[in-house]
Figure 1: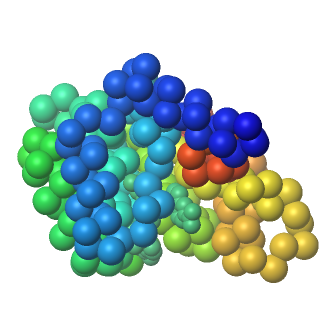
Figure 2: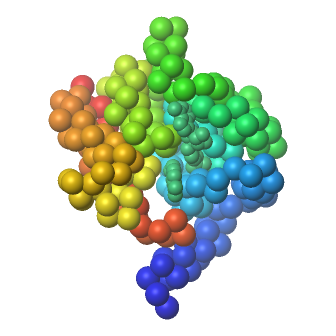
Length: 223
Ligand code: SAH
Ligand code: DHB
Ligand code: MG
């Protein structure tokens, strides 16, 4: 069995063993497919990872940047108590429409606020409204935007806020300082900001699975 086939087999094993993907999550994927949306959601194991992190920090307010059809959002929203809130930001109104239906079908629509538009504008609007700080942030939109999203997220954070970012390894390309790929350059700038920001203690965890070889950045606001 090749590396990729084995990684996928283990992801399927984890999904089955921990009964991660239920009817509502599968329906969200089906709705995304039916609408022709890209299938770039986190894996079942990745979704469970986010869910467990949200529970571990006792998150009552979660900010997600990059909704797609709501798959990671359902995992995150399910970690909230009924009075909790997931604010999720999505550029594409077609994606947002599918996500809204998926949140309703999963029974979490009451805890989800979906804001449509460029995430940089939504982040600025949230700061302008004096939004209460978030306990956890998940960054997963366009990769060149990650540095801006980190700046915007820090404005909406407090000491103790957990910041997680998807796709910061990109098949190992992140280690190439000379890369011309704007996605690689975006995540390299983002990682450098995480490392240099005195308010943060951060690192990167590599992952393999059904989506190949990638990784999550994890950061905590320490002051
Ligand atoms: N978090 C999702 C996957 C997100 S895919 C999951 O795991 O289920 C990335 C999403 O970011 C796409 O839906 C894309 O439309 C959105 N996006 C891209 N550029 C954006 C921007 N400037 N502002 C907000 N969302 C953006
Ligand atoms: C891709 C994967 C992601 O997780 C993402 O957020 C964006 C793009 C991809 O595989 O292209
Ligand atoms: Mg992603």
